[in-house]
Image (tube, rainbow, N blue to C red; front, side, top):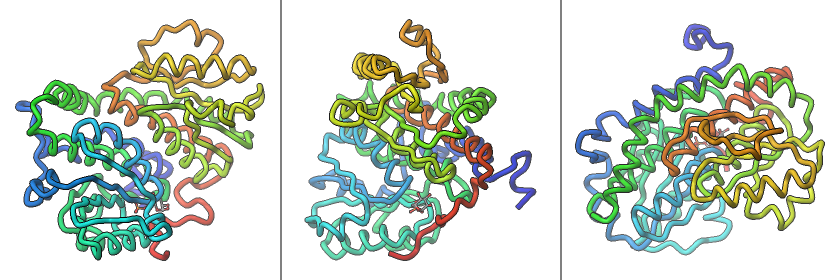
Length: 368
Ligand code: G6P
């Protein structure tokens, strides 16, 4: 195991640093950057059926669930289909109505998560077309689904998922690109996204260069008891996933808060001593994010802002910023999650926790 970790002390940080490569492996042979086409061999036989379906339902647990949340809006935009994202346990709890003309996409790194498997059985029994997106060839979920996509992220050892998240995100985005490639009105949008995918590896490499700065932030925050991560739009999932990473490996109570909900409760938490991370990319939600920032600073909150490298806003003058490369809005979450992965890792280390095996958690939860 020591050898596999190479120069890294833990698998979690090694796997976070794998991402510039693992994302390329996910796209290899599937995204053609010359003719802007995406072809996923595993879906070909069912493509017509998927296009003909009436809605798409994603289901997963944990980080895999967040990858579904992260792509929901781009999936809806490209496919123009109703999309819902459900925690796998909700299927059974809520006995959700599922029909023969539904497509259900099950996302699981291990392909063995019990709740996701139970949701799959539930949907299969009701005649839905079931698609698996896993990182494990031959896993139960890849065998039990009608068709699927392997994310090719390579083995993920750390309990806290990093590279599987980015590869799941890309695999799901590729599905949406392929499903929409008969829609000529989406050509410009698809081209923009595919160009963003082409640059992604470099963008991730640049983002990982934040490591020394993030180590310092971790020193600053290591005694924190709470931490909130705020953002909106494309970054909603980044908030949830960033907070989950922090919970999992640092044991700090962390919450992902959607900026649009601030005034409906979470604003009451804001005070000078509350550690806050605000995710604020230059996208169409920017002015809403500015509002959120003003609401926070008016209550003496001093957020650390994950901002675009190009953003010269004077609002950041008294604030710490983590500057990330700017990419296409729908892909920006892939970049913005990286500082949060690194922060949770360095917080764990600063707090004396082994991030590869946090207490009470298992890599793969095979019981319901
Ligand atoms: C466990 C792991 C998480 C993972 C979740 C779903 O809770 O600790 O890291 O996100 O299971 O696992 P899966 O293999 O289905 O993606």
